[in-house]
Image 1 (cartoon, rainbow, N blue to C red):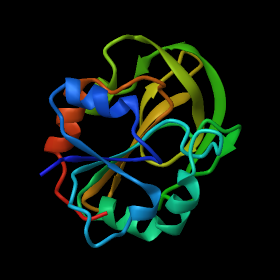
Image 2: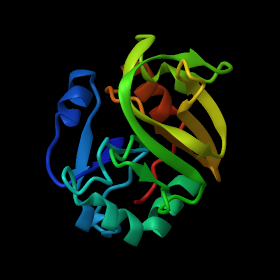
Image 3: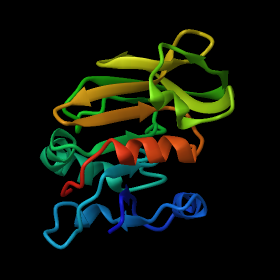
Length: 186
């Protein structure tokens, strides 16, 4: 059984990154969300650019299936959500408050507390496509301007991890996210 689902219109290099680090994943096409034929997953990844129609047609499907996404998280799944790559985005399809502003640049990471979610990248200097100007939950990583770039939100039995870091996740982070999650239907 594959632990990871990533939602997108077609195959991405993301899948190769996961495979190179020993993780099996499955591409979930936007129209397939909620299908009774989908297996259960522990980690759902929504890559960068999901709300930008120039990159993907995923956003309408996320809006349509917000109750399924909420159920996935509430029942013990982890959602790793990257930046939307739009000027502004309010994540209306999530059951929590998150607001994003786009601002692509290289940033120096500042950790807040001791959360293992901070393992998402190994390098203290990363590319970010923006920041969160409003969030619920625990602000785990900030940029040098004290703007939130990674937030961890406990929701029901699961987690929402939203980030604007424009880099693939480190394998230790992926293992941590999978190990702390349950197999849940999407």
